[in-house]
Length: 221
Image: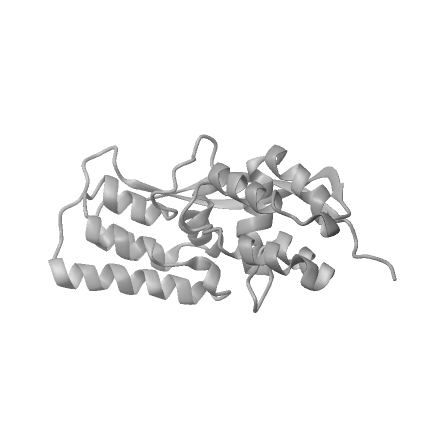
């Protein structure tokens, strides 16, 4: 019986374009969120990971980062950071959840103060370009051998962004492919599920994923 298709290791790059829109206070933030295109919402919610030089897992969301670093509002930052965009395919639902968080906070605090010039939130839209690395893996062991050398774009695409594509189970690409090997990879898949992609930077995720594959039993390597 033939085995599963080889795992195609892909990479990705981010193309970001300024929208020419900014927010200086919470009311402007709410108004901009209501009018942003879907690609901009997703960019500011989660694609921070792909920006050159970004490797800080403190907050995934630009909205949360801005609230914490420029509005100096830790409560709002935590509320915005708690929104997980990978748990829904409905961008309008995400938009409404963001608006609700901001409006509730405005009602609680009656906050009207804004940030000084130069600290506004600048809105971007983005597009992901997918690239084929030419690398292939035919066994779990071969895939594991590639992990430490993978570019961070591969980790983002296969371990983070994949959760939007694999509905309804919302698993990463590695786990989806490993399912083809049946119960022999069950323990490995369980370990991958414990890697908290919402907590770690991409480089930290790569290290933890690599350690998961490092414990593969010889019979499935």
